Image 1 (spheres, rainbow over the protein chains, first blue to last red):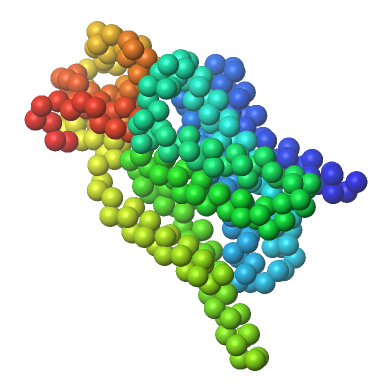
Image 2: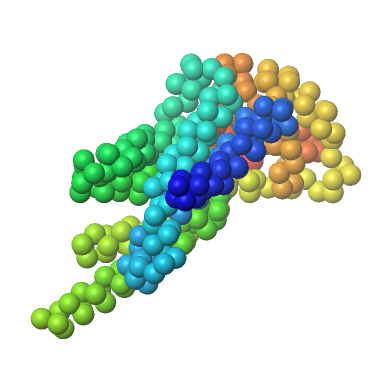
Length: 196
Length: 108
């Protein structure tokens, strides 16, 4: 019971930005094109939040905080996909024409976004307990697609805005976490070797 | 496992370097050399100018020292165009981050 309350609260929290975006769009306060940036950015940020605790725990060890973070990691990933879908919906509203969407698909700034979304789709649809149990090690491998989705998402962002600073700011914490993971793995490797 | 982690770090490092090496020709960085804003033409004149291009106007704004127009062409293409605030000359047009028009001689 307690965990379902926590989960409900978490999802409420995760959906608030999206509800606000939909609200201002449906109230006519913002154009669909104005919602593209916030929805895309939200998706990227949630991806980062889902990708951080793994490497961090390899450096800091599994403390209570990281254990809790890892416990909600799947929710963060699914929410990232949710915001990517919302981003796509705003794009469809903005374009308002299937032909125009097809016509601009070939632009690097556009197909990178679509590909990133497709790469997120698979890890997202198998993010439930039964699939996790059934797929075992394969499940984890499929989840790694998020790395490619994330990088493509950043490329999509840079190609559209030609401003690398915001994308780099988002990449920085992950680079740091990856470096820490690398250090953590080396440290463990050395300890293991010294024990044998 | 160690090999994978090294690969990730390397890719991340390469990407960071690539991004740092990116030339600063951000579309937000277009320089119009427009001078003091008191000499600028009004936004309504800009809208008329965009309308005369046959575009459906979505949004106009000041970006740096340029006028920027978000619009859709007659064939439904989403575009982003930069105009000189004083002369209202069309300087650069982007389509989804790709430059599709540049006024002859404009280097800003």
